[in-house]
Length: 240
Ligand SMILES: [Zn+2]
Image 1 (cartoon, rainbow, N blue to C red):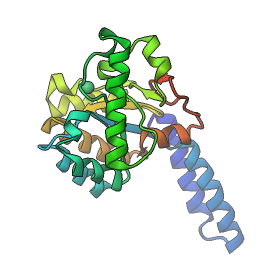
Image 2: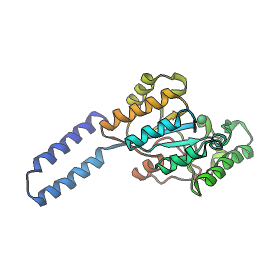
Image 3: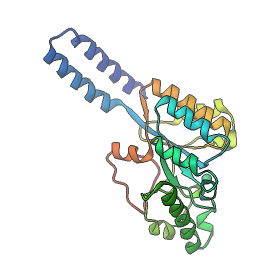
Image 4: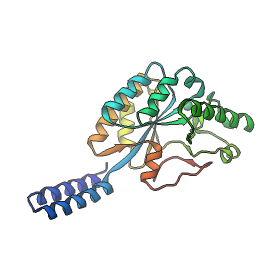
């Protein structure tokens, strides 16, 4: 949250405190006013995890998110879903969004269009089988996809606006620092749940930012809150 947001939040709280001693009608009015200011100043962000599920670390992450009442988005790789179906079902059951990160994690713009689309479809079919019919948003591996392929995908596609470089840094403090410095309202944070350091950094970031009034929501929820109607075959990087 920036300084302005924090100031407005404090003003809202003072407002609320001043009117607390008033009569019922005044209290109700004040509560409404506080709620409006709260909505205007609350920052919403989406944590996203690619390349899972990991039979080593995803469970720990899910436990941590559950303890904190926070929802994230998991862009899973099809061939890993096959050996971890229960983990993926747990994600969905606990309110997280599950998305398609292709079946084989190939760089889609470097393979034949038909092959790329088949790979995405294979993961989509698998998610429909494991989780039920639905629209599974797509994150192309490495964030790369050709324009021809893009226009043929029958789901919204989403990349990211905050790159934590967690796969490269593998350092809790450095990853946490990037998240705290770069994350603002409407941002989509890229992480990977197959590193212990990433899980730790994500949970610490949730604790730090939640204390500042930031709310963590799924990508789908973020777009709904920001009143952005996601379109199939369109690639988004943030919700602003
Ligand atoms: Zn990936």
